[in-house]
Image 1 (tube, rainbow, N blue to C red):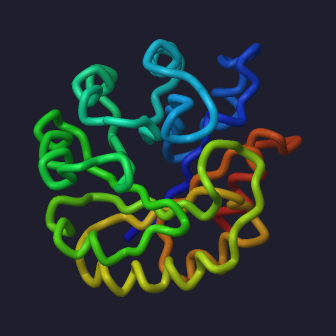
Image 2: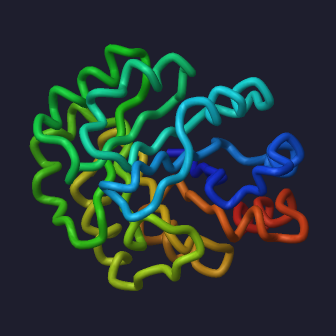
Length: 212
C-alpha cells in the first residue's frame, strides 16, 4: 500500500490560509481535526473552514471528527466531498452502522482510537473500514510529543489488519525523525501539523519525510 502524508490544518496560520495551503500543496491529503470542546478539551474549526479550504485547494480532504455524536453530522460534512471521514471509536455507540453510513455518503470510512483504547473491538468491523487512525498523543492539542508505547500498538494493529486494504494512519508528534520507525511498524498514512507548517520550507520538509 502506498504511503501518504496528510498535512494537518490545525497548525496552519489562519491569517494567511490561502498561502499556507500553497506551502503544503505537495502533501497527499489535507487533514482537519474538527473539535467540539466536549469529546476533546479544545475547540478548533467546523464546516465553514473546510468549505473555504476546498475552494482553495485541489488536495483530497481527510476529515477527523473529534466530537461527540459524530453520526449526527455525517451528511453535513459529506457535502464537501472529503475522501475520508473518520470518527472516534470512543464517541460512537453503533460503530458498524456509522461506518456503513459514511460509505453510503460516498466517502471512505475511518475509525480513530485514543492512546489508551484497545484494538480488540475493531476485530468485528474490519470489513466496514477503509482506515484506522491510531492517536499517538492524547487528542485535543497540536505540538504534543509522540507517545513511544504507541509503536507496539501500531505493530499490533498492522497484524490485525493483515492483508486487508485498510490504511493505517498515525497522528500526534509525527515528524521526520520518527517517520521511518513508524513506517517500519506498519503505518502507511502520516498526519503531521506543527512539524510541517512550522518548518521554514514545508515542501522541503514533506520531501524529507518521504525520503525518510
